[in-house]
Length: 111
Length: 113
Image (cartoon, rainbow over all chains, first blue to last red; front, side, top):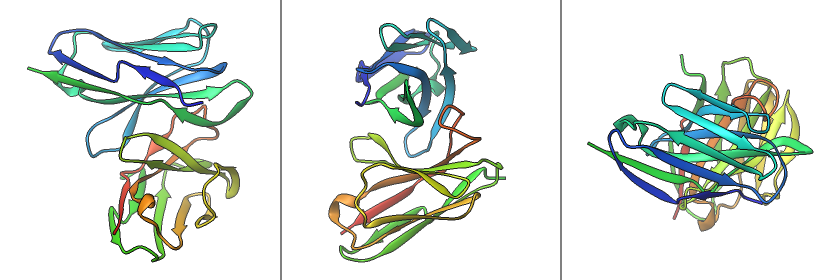
């Protein structure tokens, strides 16, 4: 039931792009993305509610493919501050009482 | 002002002891959660409360007992602590439901020796 994220880890140089994927085995109502820096709490990035809808702010955007039960997070021109572990959180169709968090993707950005 | 706060930040204790973690939110949210993050960083929901009412109890051993005295507070009491309880416990809150943005507290790192 836990969504699977890929890749497990990404290493980037500043300015490079990355894509993080989140795949569920069950139909989804929404996908949430969070970033957690080492030793800190997860922080909300964005929510995607509709199939194919793309949301974003600044250089981080995401898409949600309802049919494929997948979401992708796009990080463009990465900055040092992007380093951390990214989690997708999924709400299942018909069971929206909780978020089920994915396996996590660790992203490290170097100068 | 801190939105979601937890105490203590660190908790080191012996197996078999009983301990509590407190959580408070000043965001005026109706729903609060407890999550457990294990050593592999997997973040799993344990409980959620909406307006002091238990909504989710996610097959957590009954040694764990949440209590919500009012909608701004959600405490977690753990009896007879075991080694496997060692983890970081996060409290979170959201406006109404899990569809809303969740705001996490700083976490409580529990170490059971």
